[in-house]
Image 1 (cartoon, rainbow, N blue to C red):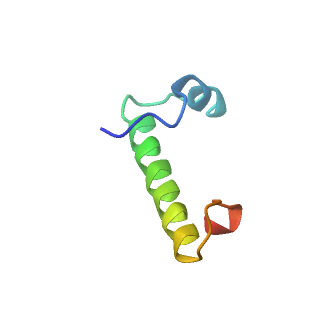
Image 2: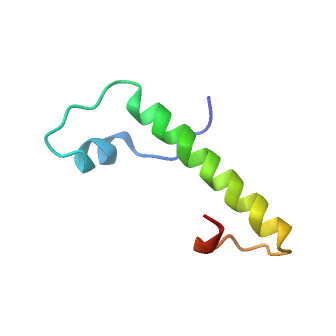
Amino acid sequence: MVELLVVKAKVREACGDMSVSADFSDVLNEKVNQMVQKAVWRAKENSRRTVMGRDL
C-alpha cells in the first residue's frame, strides 16, 4: 500500500450527503499517487526540481 496522501475525513466531507464506500479513499489515494509520480517524472524530464501545476 502506498503512503496515505488523502485525508479520509476530508473526502467524506467533500462527498456531502453521499455515502463513501470503504475502498473509495484507497482507490482515490492510489490515483493521486500516480498523478504525483507522473508530475515528478515530467518535471525531471524538463530539468526542473520544482513540480508545477502544468506537470499535471
